[in-house]
Image 1 (cartoon, protein in one colour):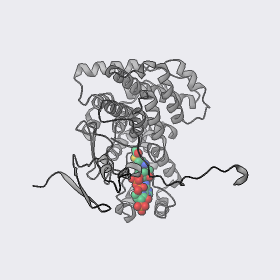
Image 2 (cartoon, rainbow, N blue to C red):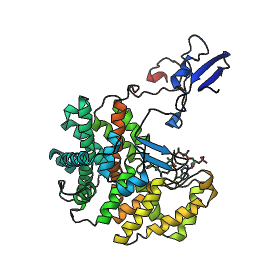
Image 3 (cartoon, protein in one colour):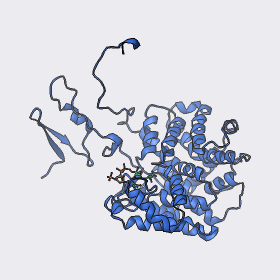
Length: 423
Ligand code: ACO
């Protein structure tokens, strides 16, 4: 019978080693016993950008990139988007189970009470330039929230839950305040009578009477963004959190990682691309530029998905519901033509490049009246439950230590310092 081991022969020495295979992985540390000589430190694995490294064991989210499958806590994303709500999904991610009716009621009540943000934060927001990017404000202010919660440096299960609820609730308030500051309007406190999604829209636009179809569409967008296993920003959350930095400092780092256009910032960049293309007849010319490496097709491609991103399918359907209320965004036609052209072109087909979550989300945000610079903030609000759940999981995993990768040194050998006149 085949055994779950890997036999490796080190041809430098002729020594053979038998490594255990568990869950389709071998332990990188098992290679350290393979030494070319006695004073050798042993082999390391080299994996820039962690393309083939499992850095943790996680039970939060299942992702099959080849099959285009995404599940939170075992539940298909399609079912959650149709039947659940964002706060309920946040509970599922954090606790690993869907809540009972009474647990959901108290979870919602806790989120509503935690959404209130200390008035001193308003002064910080007001001190930013009027045109400051809202992601920069969000990142700074989430870090600043930690200064109001010194107790978050003492880690207990109750404290981890308290800080996670605070982050999930307050990010919406702070994100909306960043928008209000950009537009020179009074910063509105949350209204506990509104749902999470309706409250977010209210704190941005000052209107409590939201069309339920728009409220549902935003709730679905938040659900779709709520977690995506070990992506760049979650890795930042876990990595910074692994040094025992508090939850707010860790979440602030995750927001910084999300800001980049290769990650969450892609939703903002997609709209830039669609606006530049402008009309359907310009699509082919743009695709040629992508193939000539003059442009990236933002909102396409994914490190893990080599198939249609299931979130993009759900977003496309949600877009139709939104446009029923708001009228069709003319850029939708450009986006659909761009997708169709790309999916027929061998450049994209051979590289398995499909639309990702960001390709269509911006069109919905725009229809909801949300300006482009706020798109990534909406993503951050949605992703906060995932960051919190992954952070808590990391903190309670006995195998996790401070994240500290190794390097292959390629700099100069030892040399003597020479004074400036001798150089
Ligand atoms: N447009 C054009 N070519 C692309 C694109 C794209 N969007 N994405 C990948 N490629 C090409 C690469 O040039 C490369 O081609 P080559 O092998 O001939 O050199 C090949 O496809 C493989 O791409 P990599 O860059 O190796 O893939 P990687 O896993 O490192 O990158 C990433 C993934 C960053 C998402 C990339 O696809 C990309 O830049 N996409 C555009 C930005 C984007 O939409 N980001 C959002 C991702 S989803 C999220 O974070 C929520």
